Amino acid sequence: MFGQKTQPGWFFSSARHVEAMNRLVYLVECREPVAVLSGPDGSGRSRVLERVGRELRRAGDRVVSLSLSGLDSEGVLWLLVNRLSIGLLTGGVLRRHELLNRLRDELSGLAQCGTHTTLLLDDVHRAEADAGSVLRFLVSLAASGSASLSVVAAVESEIPEELGEHVYLPVRLEQFSAAESADFATELLQRLGLETELMDAGTVRALHEVTRGLPQRLQQLCELLHTWHEAWPSADLSAETVRMVAAEAFSRTVPEAPPLRALRMA
Image 1 (cartoon, rainbow, N blue to C red):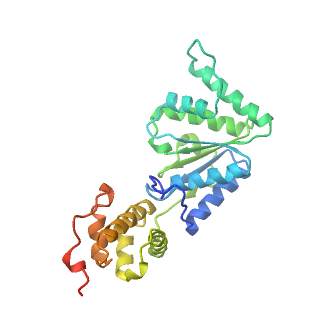
Image 2 (cartoon, rainbow, N blue to C red; image 1 turned 30 degrees about the horizontal axis):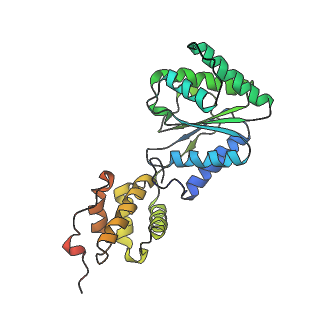
Image 3 (cartoon, helix red, strand yellow; image 1 turned 30 degrees about the vertical axis):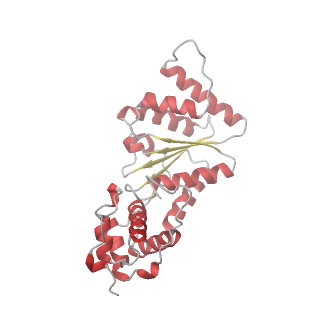
């Protein structure tokens, strides 16, 4: 669901994810130039950004979403130009400064038309080092007020130097608590059609322990448990089963057979 999600339409409304979304939307609505969302991989950064974009589009913002993973400065710049549908002259290769000027003019033009632009930049910590130069340009443009622009960046932990000076209120995601993991797993398994009455307290506790409270891992594990239970409906959904399936969760492989001790005796 979060991060590398397999059910993009579902947003699990845990209190911390809803709060993170609301804070980011509020910062953009207040026209803060930069907002940063941080959290460990699997904590829900990508899904929160996706929901933020949806809410801002409803409010009339022009929203551009972009993952910076593996991109250098040239890649970031060209993707931004493309996503903003900036017209480029044919018959020659534009130099870097020309692309930056086109980007600045486009954003300034949108501002003059009363349109606020929000850039949702995911996986900023996975960008190439030289991508920081484009970030500095965007942040400078947003902070100057010459363009109606907000930059919302998602990172794993440390706030990049290019952003830090202008971050008013960083938003942090953490792993789920045991209670939140239980709510998450219960709701998802019910949506998948699994009877959660089969789970006892030990099973729920095991779900939290083997996934370390990370929503992405919880989703992957719940989906495999659902597949496993469809194959062997007579087997107990026990803590032992959870730990067995967890060993396969990230290879997306279902065990060949349930353990004998997990089978219900007639």
